[in-house]
Length: 189
Image (cartoon, rainbow, N blue to C red; front, side, top):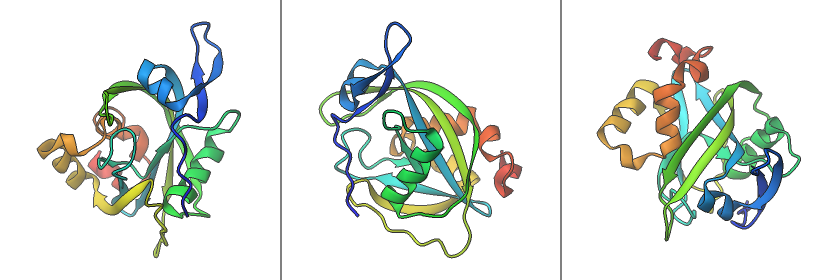
């Protein structure tokens, strides 16, 4: 299931006048434009499904991130985007997602040839997975996945932060209570 999104795909970004406008994805990240995004955390009991981004990604290649993160297409609802990308990147379908809040962050991210900037207004979704969870990874998007407890993930990030995306580090440092409040993981928050 190869559905690699082109880096010049127009995504919504806020212009100087405060209105959303379509801008090429790479241009958004080069200019550090504020733009909508979606992040999904799939949980199973006390574990989080994390993904290692594919080596061919134009930014943050090979770094570990939350289950799924992306940008909505022009006119696409955040909830529809979350469901779409879970299916495209990981082959996860039929999982009920709930919106848990919104996060805004700005961070430099390693790019292939140049540093880029993510300035995202993120709608965060959480889904509770059962056993088994069938996965079909898109190799252009994801090179590996694994389940990890919140405590173990925090310890790994503390030991080797450069192996994780800036946004995952920000989510766990600043927004863990919002993301994990209604799950079995909440005791670790």
